[in-house]
Each structure stands twice: as C-alpha cells, then as structure tokens.
Image (cartoon, rainbow, N blue to C red; front, side, top):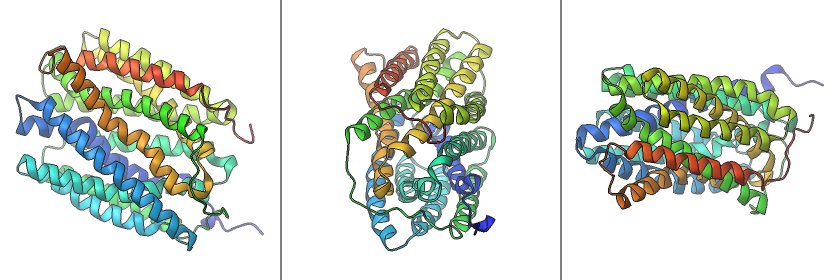
Length: 397
C-alpha cells in the first residue's frame, strides 16, 4: 500500500524552517554585526566586531552539542524533535527583535547571546530532519533543497538588513519569516513517520574527523570573507556601505542558489568529494578576483563567482554529511558536525585579528585585503583535506 502524499517527506517543506533560520544569519553575519559595531565603536569597529562574532559562535557551539544529545535521547521515546524547533523559533524571534532595538552595546551583546541560545537549541535537532525522514536515494536532492533555501534565506536577510531603514521593521520581518518557516516545517513533520533507525551512542571514526576538519577549513575561509567584506567595501566604493554590501551579498547568494541547483545532479552522479573540491577551487579563484578588483563592477563579478562556488560546495557538503554521519545518533552527530561551522566563526576573526595585530595592521586600510589572502589559504587547505575522505557516491548513481 502506497503512503498518502501528505505522509511523504517533502524537501521544500522540511527546509522551510532552514530558510527562516538562514534569514537571521544572512542579516547578522554579513551586515548587522558589522554595522552595529560601527554604530557603537566607529573608530574601533573591527575589534568590536571580532568580540561579538567570537562570543556568539562560542555560545552556539556549546548549545548545539547539549541540545543534540538531549534530542537523541528524546528520539528514543518517539519524539520528532518538534519541541526543540518550537523553543528555538520562539526564543529566536524575540531575541532578533531585541538585537535590532538594543540601545547600547551591552544590550546588543546580551541580545546576541539569547539569539544564539534560542536558535541553536533548534538547529542541531532540526538538521537531523533530512536523514530522519528522507530515504538514502533521495538525499542528494534534499541536500540541494537545503543548500538553495540556505542561500535564499541569506538573500532575504541581507536585503532586509541593507534596505529597510527602520530597526523595528528589520527585526519584525526577520522574526515573522522565522516563525512562518517553523510553522510550515512543524506542520509537515507532524504528518511524517521517522525512518526505522535505532538510536545508538555516537562513535567517532577517522572519516568523521576528516569530514569535520575539511568542512571547518572551508568555513573558516568563508567566514573570513563574509566578516571582512563590509570593511573592504567601505574603503573601495563610495556611498551607502550597508546598501553596497547588501547588493554584493544578494549577488553572492543568488549565485549560490544557482550553483546549488546545478550541483544537486552532480552530487547524485559523481563522487561528492570531487564536487565539493570543485566548489572550493572556484572559491579560491574568486578570492583572488576580490583582491584584484578596483571597481564596483569587478567586485560584483567576483561575488557572483564566489557565490556559484559556494552553492556547489554547500550541496556536496550536505550530501557528504548525510552519507557519512552515523544514523544512530544523528542529532548529536549533527551538533558536533555543526561545530565545523561554528568554530570557524570563532577562529576566522581570531586568526585575522592575530595576524593583523602582529603586522600592526588592525586599523590599516590593508586589513581587509590581508584577510582575503588568509581566506584563500584556509579554503585551499580545506580542498586538499577533502582527499582524505573515502569515495562517496549516491546509491542509485
């Protein structure tokens, strides 16, 4: 007997909450953390941004691990992990509004901590949704949906943060999208039956470690580019920096969605390591293009190239994670796997800040260019590390 259509996993509905979550990060990580740092510390914005980025990512890392472990224990007793989605969505929606309305730097810090706590209660358990409900043969397609929705959510967040003039409007729009995405995913998950897979203790293998390291290196480079692009654009292009950066990020993220769409088929047919490595190599070339850019048009070309590359990598990254992470302890494994995304948010500003301090260039006009060179080295190292993973192809390739 065929299952009713409403009981079949739909990757778009499963990914709706991911769109809302990524709208938050699209607004904060590329624009709002930097612009709010400028508001409170106009003469030392890079240092203030570094402190905010490191604190937020540190809170996220600890929260995801704890939430993932508890979620897997709840899963043993039949939970669909929806209680974690609910808590994260409600706390995150309230905290993002507070972040944009914070009248001083210390309230901004507290709002960011609450936001990271709330969303990361949901993220680890939520990222187990694809492997919880989607059969192996459909993982590549579902991964492409998640990568595309991540990019589109980032686009929406960047647009809101760049072009909405009212802090209330920005926070309200992001909170509304987060809650709407949660509602769509939660309603769908309630109708699904999880795949019959036992919950077992997490076993860390060499493949798990290599997957973690390669992902972390790629994300360190990504967050180095994302974190210092605002400061680079402020020096290179005259006018409204927030609007200019927003337009660049939209170009990057739309291109990433396109790259993810094309990479879905490649991740189904070819070795996923090769697809991820191809994305990384193009990303390094795009960083070189950023360094050589002298006009706005050249910057937009570099952003489009970087976006396509990142979309390709994201799709292969999701597919590799779904292929290699242990199915018996998915939320715990996802929480640890996500440390390869969160630790880079700590390391990227720490590495750049240390190098700039040693070079006495922290407040130099060359600081963003130095950051891009560091990013290229980090991504290239990640591409080389991918070779340590075993071959990974779709079961129906």
